Image (cartoon, rainbow, N blue to C red; front, top):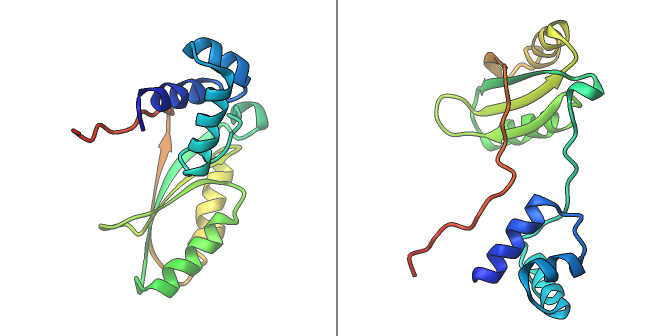
Length: 154
């Protein structure tokens, strides 16, 4: 990644709907160069797609929580089975498979505290492999929308 790739990556993260013409203009490069660089970033898997940022409150899911889950036994089959289960639940926004005292951290969004309680008590704790669940309600969520490459010291 050179400076041009980093600049392109930053601009795309700020607004992925920008046209190639606009990106080239903002970076003072030829449109063909810009298109070639964006295609190469995509080919290399650095740019993996374009997403839509949904306002959870406006779609009726204003209550967010982080749910830490510990499983037993902590073997590959149990972890993969649980991961497949939770990634299919509509309340789950993100799934983190962890090391340490918790095996999973789930970021969920629901309509209200009753749904949050139902999610934990009726869906999660019914699974036999779960030995511990801890839920933390999220008051505010701030997400970095622009990520720059790490400096390698080269």
